[in-house]
Amino acid sequence: MDTNLLAQLKQAIKGDVLTDEQTLTVYSRDASLFEIKPQVVVFPKDEEDVKTLVKFVTKNKKNNPTLSLTARSAGTDMSGGAINDSIIVAFEKYFNHTPKIHNNIATAEPGVYYRDFEKETLKHNLIFPSYPASREICAMGGIVNNNAGGEKSLQYGKTEKYIKKIKVVLADGNTYTLKPLSETELEKKMQEKTFEGEIYKKMHRLIMDNFEDIVKAKPQVSKNSAGYYLWNVFDKDKKTFDLTQLFAGSQGTLGLLLEADIELVPIHKHREMMIIFLHDLSHLDQIINEALRLAPESFEAYDESTLKLALRFFPEFTKLLGTKGIIQTAFSFLPEFLMVLFGGMPKLVLQIDFTGNDPLKLQDKIIELKEKLTPFHPKIRIAVENQEQKYWAIRRESFNLLRQKIRDKHTVPFIDDFVVKPEYLSEVLPLVTKIIKKYKGFIYTIAGHVGDGNFHIIPLVDITDPKIRQSIPVIAKQVYDLVHEYNGSITGEHNDGLIRTPYLQQMYGEKIITLFEQTKHIFDPNNIFNPRKKVFGDMDFAMNHIRRNW
Ligand SMILES: Cc1cc2nc3c(=O)[nH]c(=O)nc-3n(C[C@H](O)[C@H](O)[C@H](O)COP(=O)(O)OP(=O)(O)OC[C@H]3O[C@@H](n4cnc5c(N)ncnc54)[C@H](O)[C@@H]3O)c2cc1C
Image (cartoon, rainbow, N blue to C red; front, side, top):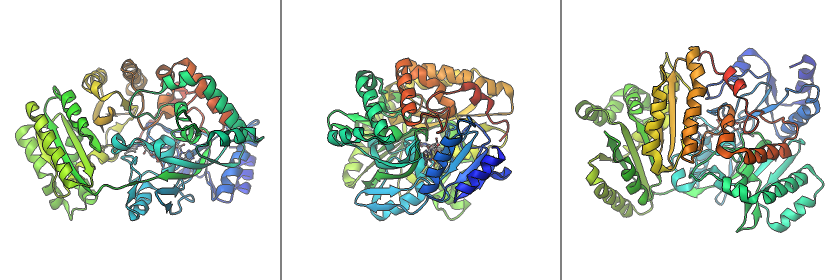
């Protein structure tokens, strides 16, 4: 950034404005396969700072067309959503006050880590049920802006369902509170001669004029983070108009989030977990059907590579499991070591969790499922005395273990989050793995939310090899063609970012993409918020910013 402009920025902001090499290097990465060096990282101190930043960029954009603002909370985005080439607005330092909880609503700032948020909600016996697997390392700003989902989304749905009100700074540099509006409130809002009034007027027209197409465009799978959720804004039955639904999953492309009111649910007192070790997948469809019929709270899976990884790095689980030392941890993994030794490595491990307040009902479900699965002869284990913690740790931590522990290979999330209806999984998974196997140098792990048909395939590669980097968009295209064929979504929870925005056109078609672009233009006429994400994707830019080393 030009020194004069930087001096003006430093003068205007009370928080920290940093341009040192070390900070720029840290903020040039998130959990994606990309690396983009920003020009400045700003840690706004308060709401006034955020407003000043937006006004500063708007004012200087004309003479500095590449100026933009990319919000960041904990920076664990896997799609390149939290990195860019201009100003990074980092919320974790000052926007992290303890959440306030009133009745069943928590008011949280974006920089509050989920692990701290949950400590507060548990004091009230409440929980936010759409926390992601990155629960220990991510923050609330990213949860809202990625429309995060997780292990409980099968029963409870995703973040979008729990956002009740948000405080945002919009492109005019002012703060607004968005919440569902009744017809009368909407009429009043649309009369206002403000930037917000204009947004309501234009968005109302856009949605009403295209309502049939918008409703038809809603992906017919249980989870979706792709695109802007135009279909969720106008609720025909309740007659409400709710712009918070556009911010859910918008990756900071429509404005900057200062605060969110998030609904919580009571925690269930009891749980029963069944683990199924499948040595062949021939009955996967039937097993999925039987389990889903009993309405589990979560239904997760991981493949043999993930289990191998957990067994190889079992000492890493000592802290996570709260075991006293390596010997005790080894002891807890003994049944799995023995199973592999005598029975071979299972192809897929299924993990089914039933929760509720009546333990007898849960036990009945386990007995019933066991009976229903008998004809398929799977190897079943029922988790007793906190054993379920071990299985959850394997499921949640596999990607993190890959990122941190494998030295000569790198995790490259690019086909990491597709969704198809669960009944298609046994067809789609082998087709996807067949595509990957055609390319030399791509090994992978698979883990995911079977109940939602949402799978995380994370290839491990030597990213320094140019042939590998060239294969990434080639493989992605084939996998997303397949997802399109099965009417799925290219992302259930990790969102579009740099890696998937170019594939939105194929998923939604030209008409809906035009509506997404118009939506972006209504909120952000000068394209100051997180360019190239959600709309106007740029595959060349993305490919030029794949990391060259780790
Ligand atoms: C090991 C691992 C496991 C994961 N598992 C899951 C999973 O199970 N489910 C899931 O959904 N995701 C998962 N993710 C992805 C990611 O962790 C989550 O989506 C998480 O919610 C992102 O939170 P964050 O605070 O790190 O967000 P960031 O990375 O900081 O930001 C995410 C997006 O939100 C935008 N944003 C952040 N703060 C603001 C703000 N204040 N205003 C406007 N925009 C903002 C950013 O610009 C970016 O586009 C995983 C990631 C890792 C590394």
